[in-house]
Length: 417
Image (cartoon, rainbow, N blue to C red; front, side, top):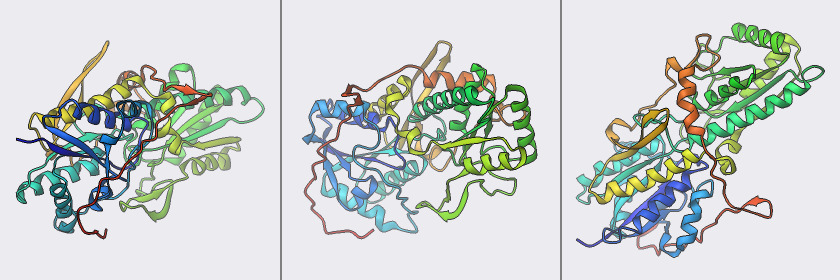
């Protein structure tokens, strides 16, 4: 049987280590030339497949591909484009198979979160029905850490390290000025439904920092929260608050809801930090500062967790190894085997059990008052932020790679999205 080409795409919000997974996919594919002839990447994610806008990764040197391991964001471009159900828009899925046929693609590696897992699963099912089997492998990625089965998601460890570090450093700043100036610092982090990133801010508690966390999993009680803030300030002279963008009132409204929708139909969020900060000011009069970590938290490759980089690369490598071994409709996972010393291995999960399933913070990870994390949560988080994996620096700045991203010649007629 002759070697087939592979298609790789990055999906959704990018991370500090998603390119490490890309590196794992491409380097491993290059070691299996008997099965995989070439890897074509989708320019701007799955849109690249639908519009037949493919990138020929064979035009990149081994050195350039290796440099992906320490380069943040999406080297081939990503997108927020959710394919509808097979019933609602079968033409898009059929178009994917048409493109795969035209370019002799037999492997589909989709690097993303929950929506990507769903798409990957549907492609694997439809390709069989259409008589053109494609081995579809989902490579896990999400800073939200909300994919099921896997112990953690590549991308999360580095965000957690950045948020814990930034919260600690800003808290030192506030503490030094609290006597005569700022007493409240609020940092807003990503996490629409799951509070994993916000939880990382709770690690500063072990550095004698008074911190309160607002989780999406815990209904916001304004009276209890303000009482907790006052208690912290009276005891420590200052307080740091980590608020998840998905924090919400008992009626389900987000603190940060803007009344608009994003490309996936989700409520557009932004501004939980100033809402919380001004709420505190109105009631207590405390002077405050606030910050929104936004893209900084997911792009900070200079502070990436070594554990996270290694796991991101391993998930890409395992995806290819699963595919050449004949597996399909699966996702490689991180399987924790020990906490102390920390140890993990690669596992495997069927996409039928991953697609459309969201993993939230377990109740045993959230403190009884709902504003902090438990020792069990710290035991879970600390190994994931361990180790430094600095990129090379040149003239004082990280030296990242920009690929050629040479286009593959089109063979089909244009396709309207």
